[in-house]
Length: 328
Ligand SMILES: [Zn+2]
Image 1: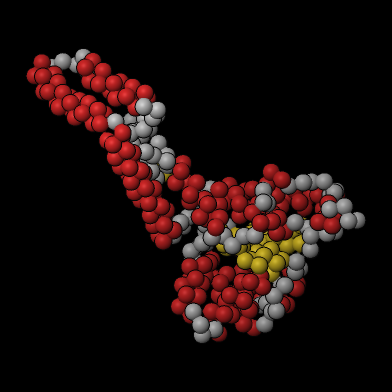
Image 2: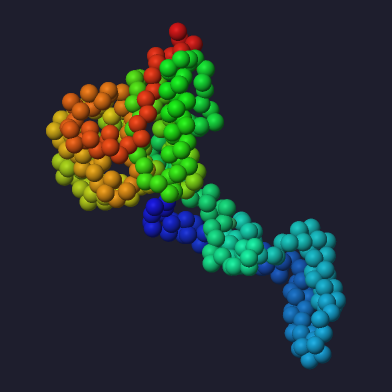
């Protein structure tokens, strides 16, 4: 989904506000110049009427020569501003982004075979879009700073290293084929083996590509669902929030099994996983539960959904956070 309509409108309102602000500033500058340099206005007026006369004459004569008179006037105006201590461009239109002129879109570009793009998002729009996707991802600072480029293979060897390399490769492939293939990811491993870090790598890589990601700790996720199901306050707000969760391109449930599991949790988890599956929307679950524990703690139907529809990766070894911090 990338941005929701509401988020898109929020960005477009920002552009409108920038355009308004820039127009106000330009107006203020024009008034300032009117006051301080009255001769500027008289040159501007004479240049406008001269330009009109010249244009008529040139149309009649079919001339394509540059209008030297008009160019003289333009340089006179610049000199006037410069001599009074203003930049030459002081009264030019003001844009924060010159490429799209603060509209968010590039228009009039053509492909190599001459086809025109209807509308292309400007780099400044994409930057705003990504910032908004991050802002709404619910990720904390440690997740936000998890990147594939920072993965370290130090401190691991043998099976542990093999598992990590395989999981990283699968995670890359998950991200690379996200556009074309519906896939889910189940990351299992004990505490400190890097599950959350790898989840963060995937989340950041997808957000950078413009996908919407929502992160939950397992405890936070079920807390939200129970507030929605049993709470009386803000029911409508929570309803819309939960409904919207089905639209995110990726939802992450981190550390499944750390919540207080009961029949409510089990049925909510199944409904959520099932609904996301029906909508072909990807889910990433990380857990320190073994397959047996997963089946025993939740239900056969959750177990079979996950084993049938998820890429399953296992991370192994001791708590590497302690080792890499030099505690051991
Ligand atoms: Zn732009």
